[in-house]
Structure formats: C-alpha cells, structure tokens
Image (cartoon, rainbow, N blue to C red):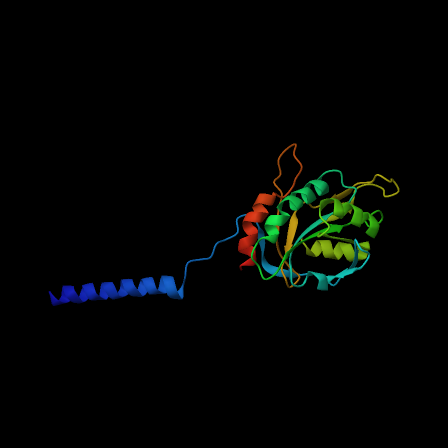
Length: 212
C-alpha cells in the first residue's frame, strides 16, 4: 500500500511539474504567419541614395522606424504595377489601423529612371495614395538594392523604343523598422491571371508580424 501511495504521489508531482514547465517556463508558441515567406535571417540593405516623388533624397534612413511593404516596378507598366498598387491602396486603411509601435508604409520603387522622373512618380503615386513613397535612381543604385531585397528586374526591350517594357518581380518585400529585409509576400500564379500578391493575405499576417 505504502509503495502504491508513493508511486501515486510521484506521478502527481511529475504531472504538476510538467504542466508548470509547459505553461510557465515554455509557454505555447505565439501565432505564426501564414503567407509571409520569412527569410532565415534578416538581410541588411546596401547603402543607397534615390530621389522620391518630391525630388528629395531618399536613403536607408527613411526606412528606419517603419514596417515597409516594398514593391518594384515602373509607372509605364501595363498590368502588374497598377493592379498591385490598387490592391495596396484598398488595404491601406486596414494596415494603418493595426496597433503597432512602428507605422506601416508602402514603398513603390521604380526601376525605370529614364522615364520615371520625380514629377512622373508624383503624378502616378498620387493616383493611388499620396502617403505612399515612390522613388527611383540610377541603375548603379537600383541593381544592388533590388537584388538585396530578393527581387530582380531587366530591360526586356531596347530603351530607344519609347514604349519599351521592363521585366520585374511581382512579390512584395517586407522591411523591418531597422531597414532590414525579413521576407516577402509572393503572388499567386494562375494561368491567364495577373500575378499579384493578395491584400487579404497581407492584412491577415501583418498584425502577427508587427507583434514579433
């Protein structure tokens, strides 16, 4: 009897210790993002100097203190860019309503400096939301910057043709308040449809992201 009682007491103590460890010492995992493809480690961006839609200097310092959703494209883009920016415009009020110490910004990075002057960028971005950042700069600044963001672009046509097209990534890159790339939202690729990152997925994940 005494042996059975002792075994019972030991089992109860072990159960209590297990519950304490699982709840207090090792609490349940916090919510995980569903759609953001996180990189194993945050990636620093190279030092860069661009111009924005007001023809002011835009550099790494502008990214500090914000969560930034960055999109690479150009204003003469016939499909992906206007569709993506319209998607971001639609969810922007919801993004601004997220409780965070660091506001969420939208950054449109044009990789077509030949045509996308500051004045052109301002006219274009104001059509979507004047709070969005719109920038461009020399290719020697753009190439390493876009590459470090996990994106790409290439001139698919001769730029002597006024209607030349630019190939570019369709993902939306997420940059943390330290100005480091932490992941990206990739578009859904379906035959016959424009590859665009879904706003509903961004809205679902961002409250989790900003609480990390």
